[in-house]
Length: 381
Image 1: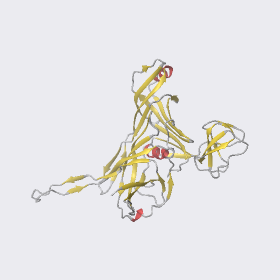
Image 2: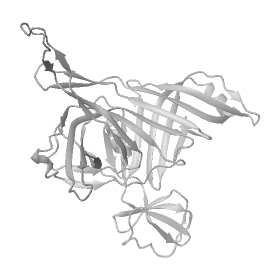
Image 3: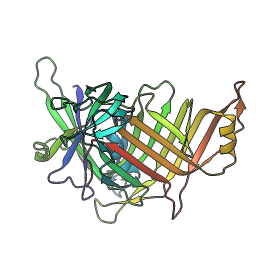
Image 4: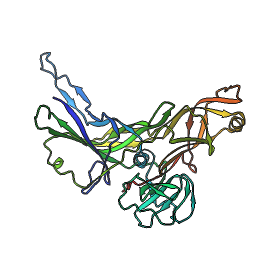
């Protein structure tokens, strides 16, 4: 018997553990692994009169946990940050209308007059006399406008959020195809897990990566792998397929105290929410608690000596991870970071090789994490 993972749906929950009646399903095309499973605690009870025979087990309340391996894209970012850091406020990014005969630079973003598209400048130049026609263009297609090359985007949305005490839950459904070899019709198997929260997630990069991979450690409240469940026949809601435009090796910028760090060879930042699930006194109850957030990581880069000296004179720093890709933008700010004191080695070129672990923290007035995402994905309550 062979199994082939076919679809992974992700949806926002209004009530933890319950699938909405009309969900806005997100079909994720960038999942690499899936290990979410039920853990059933059990206890062997030795009964009198069994004559030394093996005793049956008493089953406790199940818990659900596992990992979801992903390749990062602009559309995934707000979903991951909302469920690992805190809910976001959704607004429209600040842009200007397209203008004729205007000089544009790479990275500029303008509104198209059709009201449903935006244009991101891929190659700078001067715009032509008439607005480019994008009626037949797909998202991420390019159009030429005078000496400017634009990337066509659907209308973008901006998300802003910060570390929150509560984390909203989501649900996922996995569809597997069983069999289907040698002309045999495939049978479909479904699994559904609800009340999910991201317990920990790592944002990382090493120098030879062509893309950015992350593993979301997930804990949940409920699960259902009953293939005869009639609810699986009609998934309900609308499917929105996320794009596969991965962040690449040049799409991440590291900043310390808002100053870009060059020649970064490795960077990791792990957000750990320390979520625990306790068993309730009522059968089937799981009591989920979100603990104190923990932020750890490491950074390896080159700095000029002057920049290193400025940084070394401060005890606490702001560390930012900025991802950009053709109009998609995510900035994660770890607002108060302390680096381990590591003696630098000075290169002949008067650069400092800086390699250090770090940890982040927050206060009542300064959250440990702020984030901002700009993407075409619409995802919220």
